[in-house]
Amino acid sequence: MMIEFKKSDRSGIYAKTQTEMAYNSNKIEGSTLTPDQTASLFHTGTLRSSGEIVYRAKDIEEMTGHFSMFNEMLKTWNAPLTEDLIKSYHYRLKAGVFEDMANGYPVGEYKNRINMVSNIETARPDQVSGYMQQFLKKYAERSETTIQVMAWFHAAFEKIHPFQDGNGRVGRMLLFKECLNNGIIPIIIRDEDKEQYYHALNQAQTCGKYEPLVTYFQQEQERYYNIAQTFLLDYSQEHQTQISPMQDLERFLASGSRNTALTEINEPMHVSLEDEFEER
Image (cartoon, rainbow, N blue to C red; front, top):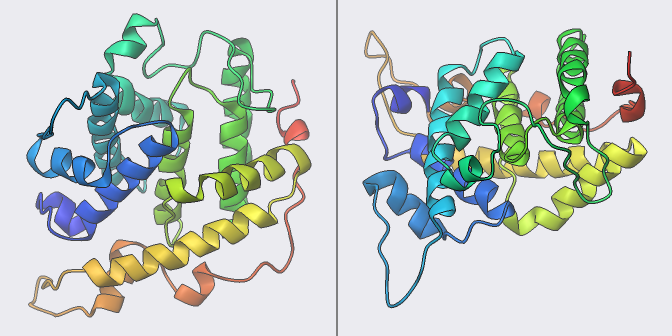
């Protein structure tokens, strides 16, 4: 995937991952674009219309913004996670969205108005910076990185909800980045699994039960692993050394061992998000 990205090759796993993640992550948030339309935007920069179909400008702007955010993630996949890096992802996603600018939403900066998600009380604007610092500090102090830790990581970020809009898409991109950075097969959350995903996320955020989210993540790891094997391209290294598809997957997705990445849950994490966000 990294080689294809650097070569601007849109025929393999890079393009597949780009379009699948952009379509699903935006669709979860209400985008009306189809998978074919997403692919057309990515490959040709065009969107064909039939009949009297009307496309929302925001859907197109956020789709191209997601492409840009994904590219930025690949450029920084092994960079330390900081507030500035997270803000840069949000900027890539939202910089070209006129509706957000018209509404006065901060782009590439933390929210300036209270927002809520379902029954989850998110951080107030005056709390966001402090909570994000605590969140990043705790994550940096982890003794190991497992899929259980990634479930906590995603649930905690989404509960803070640091931006006015785009939190889900930025959060799912951070999840993908940190999986790559820590030798874990990455995860693409699918729109068709939205109810399962939201239920599992809610269980983690309100009850401290991470098992449903971990189970869902493992399911999607298996799916992405299979997709990646199908789309991997043959290539040569410096000395014309051929690398097998399995080695290619492990090297360029930083997946390490399949068995390690997809390990069963031996002991659930017991992390209180209330403690996590306790004001200091």
